[in-house]
Length: 294
Ligand code: FAD
Image (cartoon, rainbow, N blue to C red; front, side, top):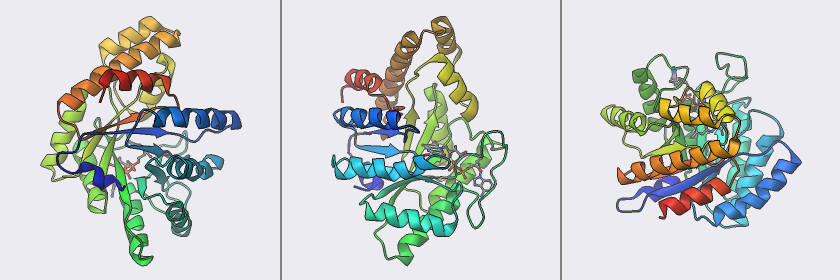
């Protein structure tokens, strides 16, 4: 099924999981054990991120293909503009088609660590919207059935954007270029999400907007992630995490409870789905799925 087919009127909210290709063989072995555990939680689809460079890129397609073709679970490959010329993008798209995968999460990607601005690769692209356009052109030129395309949205504004208004205008470009749905960056205060949806709707964006939630693994890990992506940790949550200190088990428990509270509130307020950044772990998601008992 393509993304857009999940969001017809009257259909229950989707649950999707996002995993990443590990860098090591050991990480890959662990992931291969975790995939069936995640599938047993009955998400609607699983998406697989795309690394900045190197071997994890190859693994995106390998893992997505395994999920789709061995387990029969719907899946999506993430794809970025980083380090890829237009010809290379076409090659990757052809391989995605050959694997039977019909959904893509299309992104610009981040600048390399330490760089402030994104430099487009030679004969490549600067923005997510251009990648979406490229995918739509590829479909037409190859007379290919259309992909489901998801794009990224930022409830607290993309870290490089000068204002929320400008960021929303750029989000609109991505949707107008052919994005079927929007998946958001993680956030810990649902008010940011609902405010973002309101702004997007006022700007004329009608695509479904799926909130992205990340269960916290440790205080240190979430501090690093939020400082990179610009998401805020509410004071109350931060003080709970401070109390947990280096006790990752405690922090993870706080994360589970936080995720359950956010999920229940989002579902009660009618979101079309929830996308969980599961960080290649199944135990937290088991607890969360049990608590939200779909
Ligand atoms: P864009 O939409 O291109 O936006 C980037 C910045 O440029 C924004 O500030 C925007 O306002 C601005 N902008 C956009 N268009 C224009 C324009 N025409 N003129 C001027 N400014 C413009 N990263 C990975 O490397 N791999 C992944 O697999 C991955 N998966 C992700 C999944 C989700 C759901 C999310 C939310 C993020 C993911 N990321 C991933 C991170 C993402 O690559 C970064 O957040 C990146 O910095 C921005 O990507 P984008 O597609 O949103 O960029």
